[in-house]
Image (tube, rainbow, N blue to C red; front, side, top):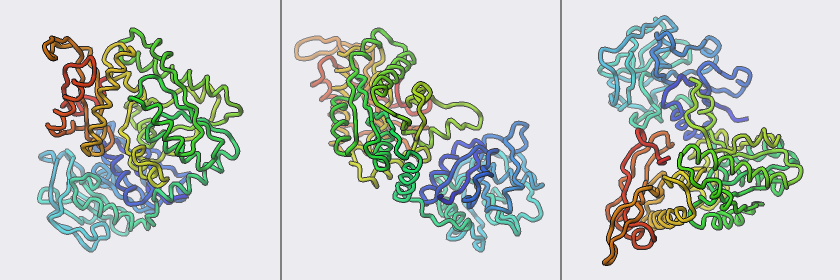
Length: 507
């Protein structure tokens, strides 16, 4: 079992970022709700981090937890609200700051004898984000860093391995934030040996033990998560894994054939199902986005189920669930941010047990594991693609002709992104077909045809995204190629909306 750091989530928007920074330092960590410390599985816990929170510690509905069993037993680091919570519950004072402390600041004083601030010098830039501040510390708390406005920017508890910082070391703007977290891992005595190679080795061993000689089916989407899941399972159980790849007629141009070829190279046992006609029939005349999603999701489950029933003795369903999905489903406030297009409902319907080998990995870690497994870079670096596919990029009812127009336009766009070395610089890109026709001129003739929107965003986790500032000459080239080569299109526009308030997809 890997040693681990436990991050208690008090609801901060950057809790996942703390997790990612710790993982980048080759140390395994788990994010759990603030009041769910895993006492029964605490054998390998090396340290505990308390996250920030949208609340003030003195709010009636603030998230509170008992720390008596944790403090003194493990090294503890409180971040922002976490630091204020430790001070407040120890008899210190936290009050609203005179002015909201938000944005960049610099550490004017640092106690370099303290292990947490090793290799960090005064003047180091940090990022503040809180409306409260610690105005008085308990007697056994010692200030180890200050800014010109915040005296207790960081503290250490005497004779106890407990620290608090009133800034966010996990965010990019804290220039020595990673060093501070690395110092905390040193304090915890972490070996820092959590790597893609060690993950593969331990996961394959666990899968062999968990699955034995049982048979597993897996729905492939062509995306990174399901592909890496398939290769890991294949490494563990070989021919006992059967993959099913359903073409719902809403994939990218020639994607069904290309993906099947890719999977063949990987030595996977794949059944490809062409279900285009079935989906087009069920989607005919439907324009409401949520109804489209439901029809596609249900159709996918039905086709998958029909194929799976033809196989004998299947006991497990493999899924490419990743850690952000798990964290969202454990949301401490009980709100689900989004419904995932995993094969929902299938395990119950088919009486199968679930196996999810990637459920502890972030997306960037999934990619690193895929590279370590020797998968082809174009499979690993693929942009995310929605489960309902082009079904939610055609903003009206779906017809085979509209799918053809969008596939052709999208193919030109994505091919050009690759040719211009722009593909890896954006998180996600695609074309959208609008239900808007406009007047144009081609040759001597007046036209009245379709509008294509091009969308490209930059992001690290899809929670937020900025529109990608692609070069004008690239956009001009893409527009010309699409209008000249795609029959039925006479206008191309570029979407310059960020998320929030817009979403990455249009439906």
